[in-house]
Length: 244
Image 1 (tube, rainbow, N blue to C red):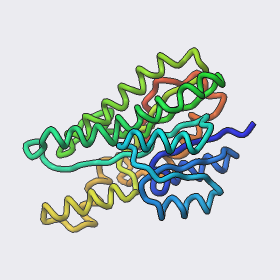
Image 2 (image 1 turned 180 degrees about the vertical axis):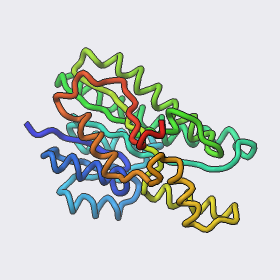
Image 3 (image 1 turned 120 degrees about the vertical axis):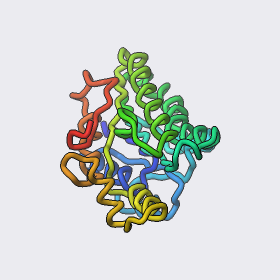
C-alpha cells in the first residue's frame, strides 16, 4: 500500500525538500500552503496534489485537508518568525506567532487523527526549531511558540502511542531558506552590517560555522516516517550540528 503524506508549507524551502525526499521513498505527496505559484510548480515536479490555504485560517485548513484525502503522514512544516526586541513586542505579536507556529499544527492534527486512528497507523512530524529547545534574543514570541510546539508534540505522542501513531518534532538550527534571507535583511537594516555579514552571524550559531541545508532536515523527517521508527515518539530531534 502506498503511503500518503501531507506537508504544510510544502511549496518551497524545508517543506519542498521534505516533499522531494519522501517522494523518493515512494510516498504519495500532497502539498498545502499560501503561495499558489510555488505550490503549482512543486506539485508539477512531484506529481503531487495540492491546495492553497493559510494554516491560521482553521476552517480553510480543515477544508483543504479534507479535499486532499487520506493522510498517513502529516508534516506540520508551515511556520513564521518575527524579530524585534521584547520591549517592542505586544500581545498581538505573541498571538500571531502562536497562530502560525502552534495552532495551525493543532488544527491539522485534529483533522487527520481520526483517520490515522481508524487505520492503526500514522506519522506526525512537526517542524519546530532549535528555538523550541533554547532561547535566542530578539525573537521572544517565536521562541515561545516553538517551545509550545515541542510541548504539544510530547503530550500528543503519549495520547496516540497505543494507536500506532508516532508524533515527533525536528528542530533545525538556522537553515538556508527564505526565512534566513529575511532575517539577514532585517539585521542589516537595523545595524551597520552588510547582508552577507548578517548571514554569517546567523551561521555562526552553528558549531560547524554554516547554515543547515533543507535536505538535511528532510533526511531526519524521512527517518521518522519509516515503519521501523515506531518506537520513536515524543522526541524533539535537533538538526543543528551540535548547537543544542
